[in-house]
Length: 483
Image (cartoon, rainbow, N blue to C red; front, top):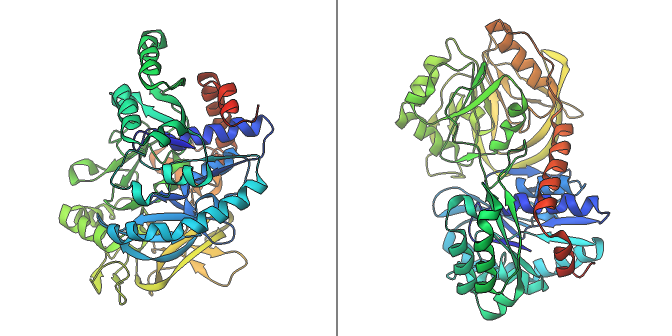
């Protein structure tokens, strides 16, 4: 198990790297995170919902993502509330305290499921959440030391030196856990290092002496085109390339991974905006998904972005995805209080659609073709509670293959598009179509878009090379009692 001194220390990406390393070494390896809290989720082939971090880890292991890799997913809907997904399906909504009291009810399920995985794989790499030193949560823990204890897994503890105070973080974490838990920690890893390792070495020697734990290596900072749940790229506000794509940084933004494929385009700049001051005049505005569409729509109205978007529509191009698609419509109706106690709210009115929230969540993988050009295909997945209906001035955007329905909407002049399909930019066709439309408008030479999946495989191999040369992999094998 990989545990961390806190959130965002790089647990997810290190598990990804180890999955690829062990796969390269010929082992049948599987990632596992018993409980994940994230608004970035994915739909498996059988229509189950899991966290995106386990998806990248599955690809690194050469596996199709499946729900057993992340049996419990928590999707925050507010500061104290979340939707609970168990084995890929909605279990219910709860407050933080209600879920804390509920957690131990899942313990037997987790133990049984993990036992099945042990029969199937040579190696299982588990990922913790946050920190094992969250002492107020330890009595009902099912994701850090509680899970490691349940299935008797050795633990490697990761600290982030880029934040500063990594030695204190590692030593403090070990001090706050119990003696038995401290024995379970078999080594430490320092992550995100910048600089000369020789300067760091005296500190590593002192760390080993103080903790009586071997430091298994120092992993440098790196910049690869891989999604990282612990490192959301939602801080850039600068225009760095010819094509300026602005993304609304919604307070409850979900599935921001929809934008990953756009980042591989050489002439594209993606920046995130949260105020009128940041808006400027982008070539394309993307309104991403939201876990609470009504609250985020209220945020747009309060911040002034609501009116700014309506003004921008006169000359700009807009794409809304899932919750962003719903916001583009005339109204959103929530008769069953699925999101809030607001029964109805007016949308931007840029697409002639009306959305009604239902009690059953739609979760499915889809393949589709653009109605205006059947040669342009997309694949992705749907995750939504709302059902949107087109009015007279909105045309459907996609034809869903092998199923008798259409998805999305487009206005009469093609300047505003909306869809429920997450991952629409992953396949080159639609990405190339949208970007070449912008290039043509700007007088830039049109280009053929790159294949995102092939690039991801190459980047995963690069990641494995970096981590393999940084860590004592032989010692990790010994800890696992494999070599």
